[in-house]
Image (cartoon, rainbow, N blue to C red; front, side):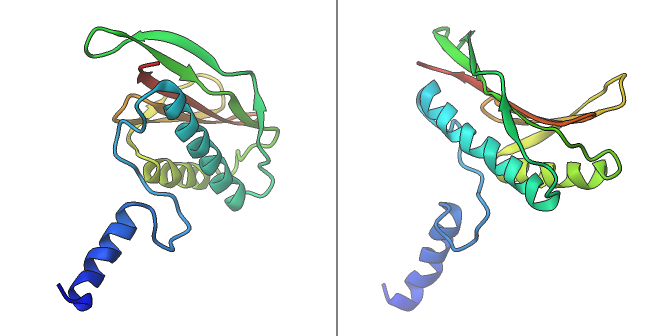
Length: 160
């Protein structure tokens, strides 16, 4: 095969595997890892990439962690025992009450690029906004804007 014919194939592979020069991260096939530890490593990066996207759009949003990681047991589709992980919350003391729509749009784009394709609105009684996106492996990322801005991420059920 000539180099001329291989170039489109190489470009397609680079774009779909995340090796292209595009600085944005790309969705990956799910499940994202073979173990809970691998999935946690992946989703910790994703969690921070979403926070970075929000901070780039809203420089006043500086995220720090709150609480520690929490693991819980779950049942795998084959009936074996697995683990879910609730990652530490990423919290900013600032909020975006006058620009929630723009913040949600940034969150939605970043979450979709990371593989969270199912959008679920979470109604609240208090004056805040929560939105949740779910990935095909059962992982979910949540955006909340009230007195502060909060990003939560729960890793779906994976084997140890």
